[in-house]
Image (cartoon, rainbow, N blue to C red):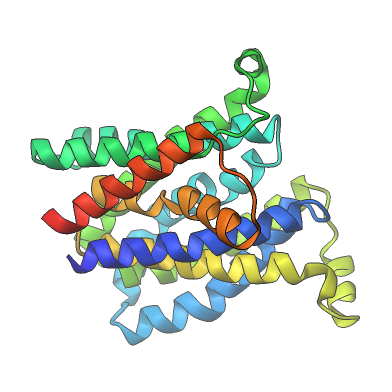
Length: 286
């Protein structure tokens, strides 16, 4: 049960991250947001990791898997959301729990009961439906730009599965320290590929953080949310934690409806209901 609770906490923080980072993307390159993500990871994940028992041997064992996770589950997601039709990209990336469920079965030999599988699938379907918006068009699926978000969803599924496997052998806290370290070169390479000048970013920060406020807060929430996801792997299957963390999509819709007075279309409403029913069902059966 504790793993499920932590996974839901991850979804809560990811909700805020999604709302704020989408605002930041209007003004900044996603590589800048990933830079802040890396910095917060260093400040938060490394101390927490060592406080809760991370060891140098355990960290070393996690490094390769941390590199895979930093690229496939973090940097690639930031990149994919900035390419192509955003409504299509969001829907395709939201399918990642399907691949986590599949790869967890094939690689980690996770075996869920029939009712658990049913509830997980209901949650996944609901999450995908909540990602649809009025701009989604089937004709856009013919565009080559769907390749990036499609493979991003598969990449997240593979990454989460491999991460769960190494965490079972070491611990979440070894992995937290490892990924904080490897995100440094990944962030630098990402900035280089995106043609972003770190010196200009530092100069802007010296003049005030106003221009980066959404990116900074969003990245902080992402680090906390991702940390919660990794810790949840200590206590429950990846095939359960992944769909639960993915329900940040319906949470974003509910936030927009309640606080921003935005309308929810019928497809989104069905998705919210299914996602929440599936999630609550998983909570009840543990």
